[in-house]
Image (cartoon, rainbow, N blue to C red; front, side, top):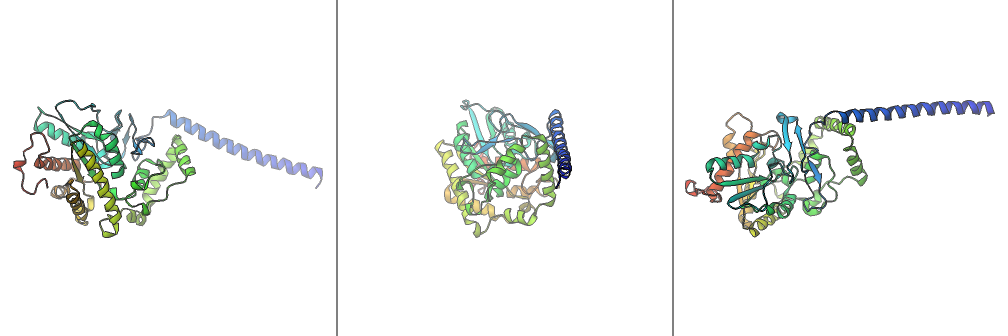
Length: 381
């Protein structure tokens, strides 16, 4: 090839390279401009509770709610969320506990936290309001320490590390059927954060734990969350996934685990609850598990096997259980919905739960000026 031909080839190569460079530069400039414009606009509402959580590798409970975080969830009536300086969806409470105060703490997941309902409509706050109405001269505090995505492993760690420091007289732990699932399934779906390496004890059945994402994937996700544009793209993918998700795979993950094949999960659950019961007893606090039903149990297509199994575990281990399924069955005669989805209660569902809990605690004699004499022999068992 002569010099002239080489010169023409080089010129064409440079021209193509220049076009490619201009396209890349244009795309890069467009991305930068879009990112800048998004930062100039008001922050988008919280989606799937994203932005309310933070990783806490320095604490045994792994992650929690970010102090001072706030946002709104467009679904379920544009609900507002605000996290206090201690990292909970509640007002702040004094430590040590003031004299003359009867204090209840509620530990749980997104049900206790109040996914889809306003703070005042969560069952801990409704319970507190009911108690205040019964006897205004008494000071009874019901603290909501619920964190979306928690399971009994993180609940036990939070109780021992933080919860017990509030000096509770009563510890209530909220159970949902998803406590028996792989915890990363719920946390990752709600927050899109990478939990890091978790011990086997965090999993109801370590043999069924999902493969964790690679370090490269986790880094990419973390970087994406620093970009408004990337976050918007991620939200779009999540919306697409909600429509085109693999329902068969989800059903496999979300099975009720109420059969003998789930023996490891039940042994794990019993161990975690017994651990929490010991923590409460060491500090002279009463302890009970609140068993929330899921929607198909109330509609009649699922059995009460889970409630029966937890009650049996409680009788054997010596900790109390409060079964809400009968109260939900009774309330289901009213057309007002009790559930937002498979297991999260509506504001009405939270009120039904609070009233049933109040009646049970009264019958056990666990409340100031309780009147167990008004209860039947089957109450508070």
